[in-house]
Image (cartoon, rainbow over all chains, first blue to last red; front, side, top):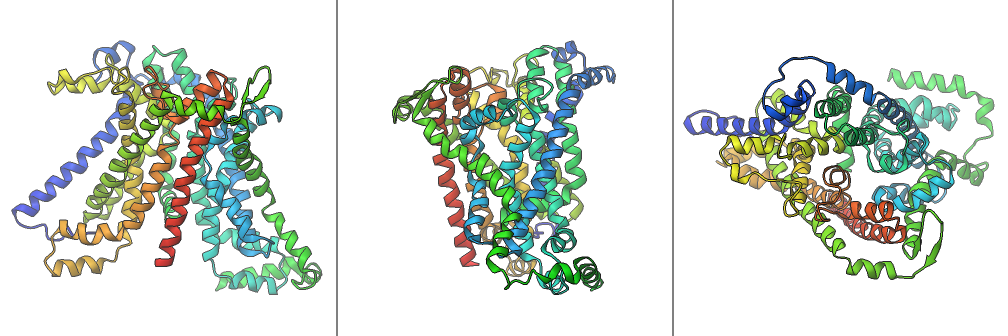
Length: 281
Length: 321
């Protein structure tokens, strides 16, 4: 775009191009090689990991992957459950909030807007100590609900911010016309605004999945039993249990990273939209 | 157009005159305005209860000493903060968080900007998208996985870093990276840069794409080379994104937790503690909740400061724009 390539003729421009490509490729190798090493490690035997760290696996047996799968299965289920429920809850609650903030005449709107969006500035670390006591007294400690509620509460501000910005830019003719026709706010929301917001909602869903699947701090502190723990915590406890069976740990790490990498590649467009809207507004 | 007609129709069909009759905006203004709160009620309750209340409560906890097992609470005023000021590990943690911030600005803001400019300089759109997506991949993976991965990479026996140094005949550089108090935190920070630079590169490429192509065409007519274009057009016109990225990076650097926890747990000898892990150690291993809350207040102060800076920055930008 910046035009560096448009005049790629002559010796020096060609050399410059070659140098740039070599650089991009080198960075690509630095990014990809560790991940590849991790994935390949899952195929190796423990002794091969020690003796020939750089070599390709001697055999492509999926044995480590199968036993790692049995190990992470339960954590995977917890992660899926927590991610799914908190994604649906966060997006629904945020979309409703954004509608209220952009399309209704609620009292004290600037104050409420500042309150909800201001939550983005508050960090989970600071809330940690009081939350322990709170979740214990609510009987939520060591349940999936603890994570679902916290993931929702801490992500509603950001998600509302994204959807609200999008709704502010939507033309008002459509909902005004519908109002004239006697549609209730609930109908306008469900039939007009929500469908129009689909692109940003998909972005929010993807961003929330990425957050919830990878979250570690809350999951580590508020869950304790293996049946409740999510993947990131499960991985670290697998690590302390089978810490010497490196091949299996590598396989488990690969298995837990794979779904999110696939989701990223499938939804790149929405993903990038969400990120830019979040930064630029 | 057909969309609006369609929606209008369904509005009539569903809304019906009977339903809409009592809802005129002027008939019961106060009641209907109050009723509008139902849209946001759940969000307000959740955010108020689970985000704001704990953060307020954190200050009260920080003025007490409490035992989570016996439930015994004693008021100690500002004692925890006095202790904080004299705690050498807090000093170390602040230094480490600061190093995190500075190095992340170098790599995830400035280096990422240069990389984004190079990627956007490619004439093939397919390749631009390819590199952008490839560099982003580590950012999609959880820090627990990448932290564990680099924990292995840094190991002297099975790790590939020392193996690589050996292959390059730089054996004398090899090191117990995470076991040496001198290098542990920097090894963690290096992992963080590896993971995070693709994310900011992606954001910068988007900012660069928004620059009108005519500016580059005009610059070329005036005989400006690629470097000159980078310095005089790309850099000034993405300054806002750069400012935002710096603020976001600093905020992130003071909230670091996962990678340190997974890779060293703050060791060896507390050399790689950051505020987040020291809070965890004090609160959840030493059961000193009051002191942990005081450490939380420090995190709060820093993130609040950067948050206000961010608000001020976006406001000012909007006025200028």
